[in-house]
Image (cartoon, rainbow, N blue to C red; front, side, top):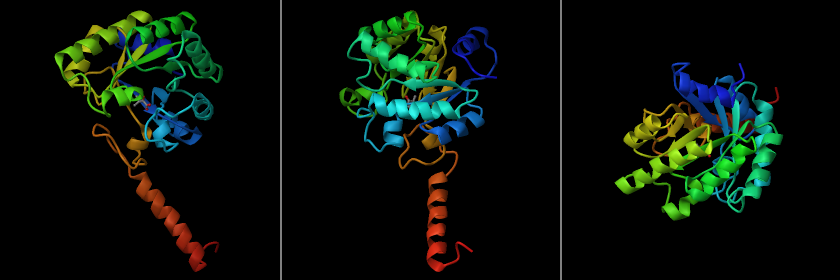
Length: 261
Ligand code: KIV
């Protein structure tokens, strides 16, 4: 059955199904087909694809045009999961109308929702505007990679009382603005538990412990395709190694005359 935003909201409100929400990232049609076939509830076209698929050092250089190409490919590969697309850095910070234009382009290509980072006043106002125009929004607080230069690296957030109070307040403000779910990235498990208890919309954790309503990982990490994985990722397969071995075997067979037979 195709997953909808309403379905995700009711999941937390009714406690049914009585299991956590699963979200995985995708960046092209193949990765989308894989995570959809695996039964992920949500496919996130995360801006981590800037690093995973395009080779940038951070998510900051990713352009709206690059994201649109990847999001269209993912959309073509998904049959059942809810498709959520990250708004790239500088596509929504400049003005409310830029945000609506960028988010609207994602919905036009068939995405059902967008995700944007942060929970300060300006972001909350942008979320409110998008929701008013019928664009479902997933929030994202804690470690927000688009602010990596201000955060001083991809470090755990919410370690002091002041920081954790701020992140809890941001999550509540995003809920009030109409977000239908919130990603909690790289924060202490106790803080994620408190946020999850305080909200009536689902929290989806990454490096945020067991108490969230769902979990997300970057698929390239799950599959062992990425060169580097964050400390909280779990690697379920070693596809990079297997792929190099397969490609090497092809090269050897061609050079030795074994292939084509
Ligand atoms: O871009 C991304 O992949 C993300 C997840 C880490 C939540 O935002």
